[in-house]
Image (cartoon, rainbow, N blue to C red):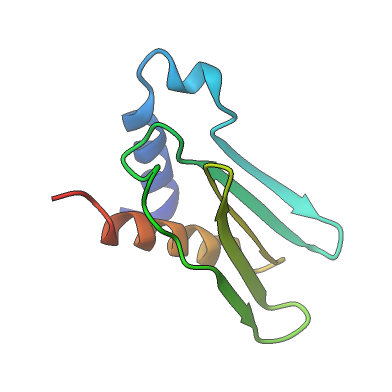
Length: 100
């Protein structure tokens, strides 16, 4: 499944009539340096209590990623060509941490 299909499926699977109304669940915005910011709220999902280790990748001034979990959300930022990689990092974390 491509990364956008995965994100759509993850979001839809968490919509329960409450969650999608209460939380600002998924946001993808741009940064002025230029770059991307991705925030995915995992509150009241199966990943709410899952540990996420900070990620800091600095390849060049334009090729970088920083991700952390804070206040119930995975929050990532990266260079202008790192959006797909950011989403793949989040996807891998979620896939690797599915409850048994």
